Length: 406
Ligand code: CTP
Image (tube, rainbow, N blue to C red):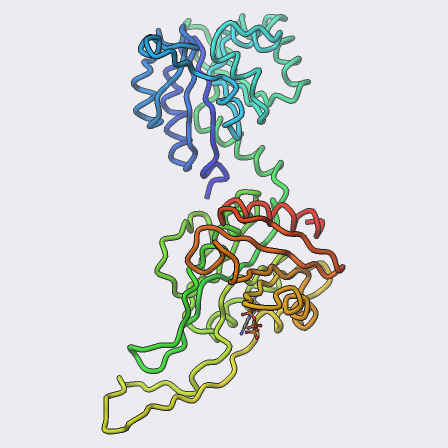
């Protein structure tokens, strides 16, 4: 799974014969699940049409501050918004002219203005003829950009459009994308870390067609899993039987049904996990026995099902936890939330408990929003106001990294 998945990439295309290769770059990025916004210079349009790039990127391509068809409406392309939207910017091909402009801060077109506005990491892949590439001016520009933190994806050697052979041709699209991925791996805080998460409900079967379950969608756990993956972690998700459509892309998903299945799956992966987060709504009781055949209506006036306690997964992992491993639990409460959450923190040997209070508006199993308070084992707590589960997942993971020195 590519780290580029769901990342917002601004692709700047400048005027070089290699601009035709930008179509392949867009395709490589899209294949990896990135969102691509193309900005091209006027000169680039002589080498490849905006229509080709907009069709491949599935977004309009921008090249002017005010496009011809926007003039009548007083609408313009906001370079600042684009610069802030992006998770990363790639200028490929970067002609010697564009390199020179961005090295000196000149911004007489949309691409260079977007570059100056971008706060995200920038990658530049130069493309030009060998003598232009070797020229001291170009080399100085590349050194200047590199010294400012711009990642240079160096030109490759080979046959050039001029018919000459040498260094200057645009790196192959696949190499460009791989170079970005390699850099992302290095820069992400959870790179090389194992994160284990459980999510969703459990089903405790009565017979082959009936079960006792709960309404958990698994959404909160999956958004946390995606946030951890986006920050570079290798994420295993032990997922109970949920019908909710969830984004499981890039996660190692282990599907389970009952509380016992979930325990066995969690136990198997726990020893390797740096951070384990138990978000699942695990049944506290399971049926003592399950009928192998569907239970038929008889003449009885009542049906009594005997339930026995399930294993507490979080507490059992808390007992197995070793130095350096971090464990987070959730608590779902309808009253006395803080008191119960702190009790669970101690009883289950967790490092943090995330409290959901069902009595609050917008909080619950099937909502897309949540408000929580996190209680830490050092006695401190932090409240996260009502927001989308996606935003909350991202913030929680950022804070876990900080609190737990991950
Ligand atoms: N949990 C678990 N195994 C169980 C029950 C709960 O791992 N058999 C975990 C949940 O995933 C959650 C935490 O324990 O991270 C707290 O779950 P919660 O349902 O709030 O509380 P319980 O421990 O079940 O206690 P009670 O139902 O009495 O509130």
